[in-house]
Image (cartoon, rainbow, N blue to C red):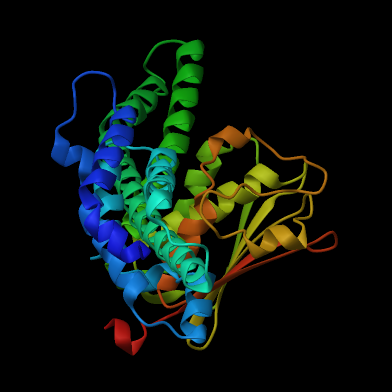
Length: 382
């Protein structure tokens, strides 16, 4: 009996075996309802049959064997919907793939007594079934992963938003304790520590919120006004100085620094670059921030002398959740103070302004981050 005909004829037997295995993936109690066990199993098998019976050229077979890019996956297929629902039901990715492994084994086990003597046609049936199974599994994994990523990013966005209130309280408490009329020298010292810690945590939360926003497809919205970049740089430098009181910072400004900028976003961008530079600088060298006005743009540079960043690290330095690697493993401050999002957020803010950001590192010149920002937004952003 041909495999496609067998699956259609013995569909219920295969689904019963699916039920038995799927039940082992749930907690012992309570017993999951049959609809949750089977989910889209019947529709997946029906799609497998259609795929096996459809004429396929050698070129199509080769293309299928190489897999589809994620953006070309049919997200309305039964397998794709199955992946989404399994993630929402609390299945792990291992459990999802185990379902397909069990389904494949069950079909072959039940088909064996009905299989004709081994011929090229039988071999082709097995090949086509495996190809279709692999395609279905890939569709389920893609949508499972997308849903998991979306759930994670939504959680991060909510977490970052909810942390703002207690951080604001910490900031006000630190500011209050540093007043000359309040408490003793010890109290003021503790207040300064609280303020620095609150500033560091606020920067991390802001990066977390921006990361979640970009991953959820919202991009980074801008509120452009005619701003003086010198003032923005000074405010960012003050923030960085509060977080790194032992690091010397220098600001060098020249030329016309006015442009249509989002002040809050650019302050976050410059703060991220300064904080990164302060963490990786070598004593006693300062972190130097340079702002220079050009004809139609403003150029920012943040420079620090310290361990050289390897060329392979520079390739991924602006990717999210990447911690900088340095040749001798030396850095200022604790790595745990960074989420590995600062440079990613800097890149996204730069791109939102229609600008470009780059990094270079050498023993002679140190590590230099360069940001080129057009004074006016590109016409397609208006």
